[in-house]
Length: 288
Image 1 (cartoon, helix red, strand yellow):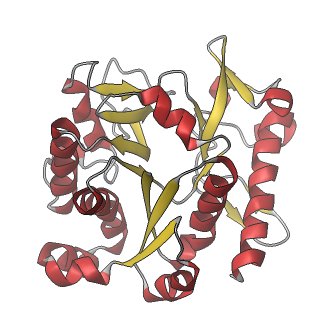
Image 2: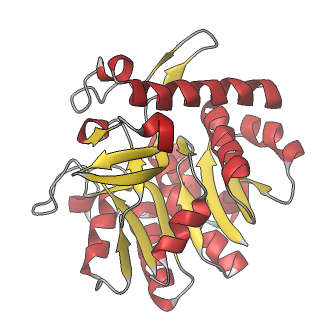
């Protein structure tokens, strides 16, 4: 059984459920552990709990952890960052299995099984911000926190514990420049035999679409990066906003991918049009 976890409030519930629907469509033998950090999301989602979807309330953890309770009272945005690693750690401790954390605005175009198979036996799997060179640090970090995988090995548990503790207690100010994300830079001290970075897994986001060629996407689901074709496994639809009539692909990342590319590049437009249609289906299915 593949154990995955996601965190959101009601505002991101449609996106989180669209992630879930993408997993149902493309993957097998998984359970998505969904932590709701407001009562409205929990009450809406709980009736849909089933074998592949387990629903949790953040109140469970705030009752027993004063630091978590204090953080929610003081800084709700940062609290949402802290829950990613905190909840992942709790799920690993509970289920004693590998855990993959996924942001609620991720969508899987292919089976997550393919991604995990490529990671093999490596203890941790992370994905680059491909627009940045890893020759020097930057304030956003080298890696995208949207998908992070940990094996339940001594190494995986140690680094997940470190990440959760560092974010919850706001340790290491030099790494606290982009929510919980830049902490992942520390993982690069691990030898290659322990750490999986990117591989040949295709992944996209508004800050790196401009790096890719999409000419064959409609035919084979592939993007081309640095002259090499890769199956697009997942996309991060960060800052995607919409209503039932239209959508805007992002609100703050046009400094990377120009706004006109989302309409003039047929492959990229298809990626976003398809996601928009899936979100609309989610609203209808779950009566959101």
